[in-house]
Length: 89
Image 1: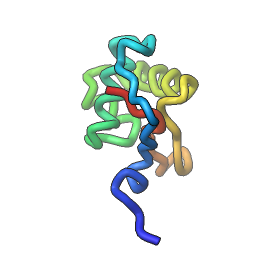
Image 2 (image 1 turned 180 degrees about the vertical axis):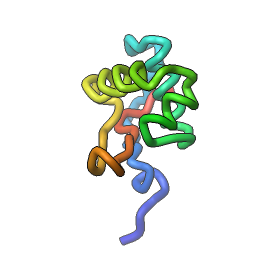
Image 3 (image 1 turned 90 degrees about the horizontal axis):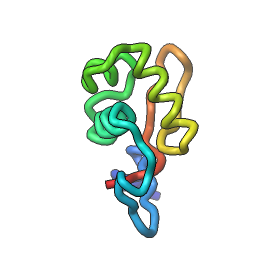
Image 4 (image 1 turned 90 degrees about the vertical axis):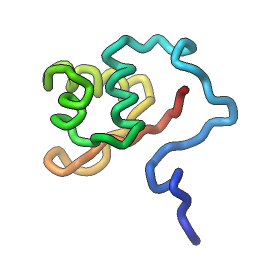
């Protein structure tokens, strides 16, 4: 069995991709989501720096996006990373 790039990145394509306006995402949530989706960062500190927000804000936003079903945390607390579960445009 071979893996596609989509399966490796953890992004699951839905039948109908919704736009950001279909979801109630804050500006911070959208910034963090875009950083992770672009593959620029997967660790908390890298995400905060790339999105231009504080580390504490990044923790709050990541938790919110995970609760809403957009992200999934994989790995342990020290070496884990964030993956996009729900793709939006």
